[in-house]
Length: 294
Image (cartoon, rainbow, N blue to C red; front, top):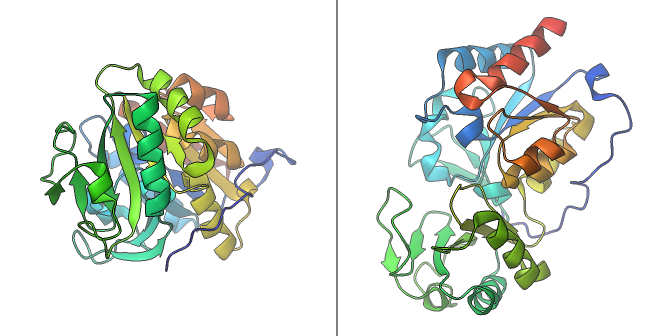
């Protein structure tokens, strides 16, 4: 199912002290948050996630990763088996395992909007190169660096990749990736948001100048809000974890939120609390304390 609607409810101001409301859902980023730097899930974290599910608290992985990169946590999705991928562009059922996942919800980036974003950013930041992330395919420009451990399905200018009759035309576009070799990452994000405006949502999760561009209104927060609404879960009943700018909206929306000890300054400012770094099992530390209070 494809959905392009804006979700304006993914912003909020707290009405009730969140610590007084029993959590029903944990939403956690992966890289730099749940995962250690070696991309492993520690035994302590595995145990904490299992204990939360046993206590009746759903755990949602909410990540910028594409579905095909979710094998690192596919053994830990428990009953519902769902994850939010591509910064909110897709809700994926991981039950089938790597390569056999099912897209439950797709919030695509319209090709017209993607082309506009590419053109506006080419003008604002000359030297930017692009890749295109689709539900199953990955395409890139010839000069796009080897930032991802995979072979692209096609090499061509972004304008050709995004054409209505371009490669992968039958698949929805989830996001485009924009890389610049020399601009400061935060400055690149600010510049791009000003240049692209409301044509798309722009964020970043990489330490390099690599931006992730999704459909208007598509973010981790807005898709998480949709999933919670379907379950009758309010934002006050959500505990969220993150470390990079693509987590800011989600941390602002959730009733309780934690920036990792290794988090970006904007994330620390957005979260209602802070935990220790990802390599010190910061997510597990909070879950353990939360379950002790119950």
